[in-house]
Each structure stands twice: as structure tokens, then as C-alpha cells.
Length: 270
Image (cartoon, rainbow, N blue to C red; front, side, top):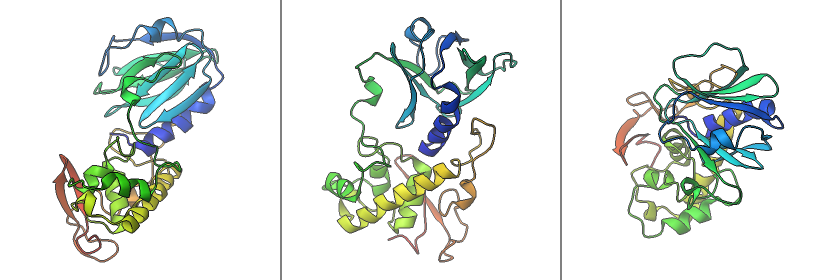
């Protein structure tokens, strides 16, 4: 699944092409993706100017005066800005056409993505009650330490909880915990304030670096310009089971935490 850096890479890739542009039409080639597509997408979005393209957690928000279209890439979704006459593929489910003569095309082979609507002044239920963005000042080690007190869940599961902080998915949680030297199996409530400060710093550093490098190349993800991300080759823990640790040489291990594969180095992470 595309994680926060992939979504942010997508946002940065498409924003210059559609911000300030007027929507001339919306083509929905199926009535639903993961959920039914609200009628407002077809009735309210055409004619509107895209004021801004923002990101909240892993959702892209296309803001207009009439409301906000919310889009989630799901497991395999991809957005591209293309000439309007570009031939349609089997899994090209949505086109948003603009006065520039281009379309924003959403391709989603597995159809786990979502296209939703949020009225002005409202917050969609999927965005209610979620935690701060990891790259903002609202997220730091003191927050992690305070929220984690008394929690027996594994620290990696805790870090991936969207109620704690949004967008720290499986890959980047594994990498941040490795960089901070924290065993992902350790109980969240047993991690010290100082170690949480280190962890928060590494989350910020790794996510920012991954965004700069275009995200993590996964099987289904390409940047909007068709170029793959380049962060994957720099991973220290994720996906490296049984390979030697790049720091100490100990074999990387994998365990299942919260139904997700969790990679760690028993030599570097305590």
C-alpha cells in the first residue's frame, strides 16, 4: 500500500497541474471503488476551481468552494495528469477533466481506493479523531511518551495507530524503530521518554528523506510522472529478513505484530 511519502509525492506531482484550474467534467466509469462514490462528485465538482491540493494522513484533498473531494489510493491506486485524448485502460476508473485540456486519471486495479466528498465546513468521518501529522510540531517524543503510558501493545503497533499519529505505515515504522534502536516488540508503555524523543526525530527524518527521494518503490506504485521512487534501496530493516544488518552484520529477523510483518535487528534494537 502506498504510504505517506508516496501519497505526498503524488500530491506534489499533480498539484502544479491542477491547482487554479477549473473542472470541466467528471467521468466515473464505475459507481463505486472501495465504497460508493457520492453523487456530489459528479454534480458539485464540475465547474469548480481547485483552490488547493492537500494531504491529510493518506488522503488527498481537492478543495473547492463547493466542497472537497477526498481520494485514497488504496492498495494499488495511481494518479496521473494526462492529455484528455489519452486512451483509456482497463482499470482507469475516474477522469477529472480540466480547462487545460488535461485530465486527472485515477487507475486502481484492485479497487481498494476511494473517492469521497466533504461539504464545506465539515470534516469527513474518516478524518475525525485521527492524530497529528508526523512532520508537524504537534508530533514529538513527549506526545508519544504521554499517550503510551500504561499501554502494553507493542511499540510498533502503537506507532502505526492513526489515533496516535497519522501516516506512519509498516515500512517507515520498521525503519524508524531500527534507526532509534528500539525493538518493535517492546511494550509501548515501557519505552522511556528519551527513547521516544529519539524515535519521533527518526520518524520525521526518515519520512522527510523518503519524500525527497520520491517515496518507496513498491510493486504497484509509480510517481505521477511515471518515475519510480528511490528510497527502497536504502532500507535498513524492512523486507530484509535473514539478510545481514548493514550496521552490525546480525541477521535481520521478522515477526508478526498487529497482523503485519515486522523486521528488526536483534543486535541493534533493544
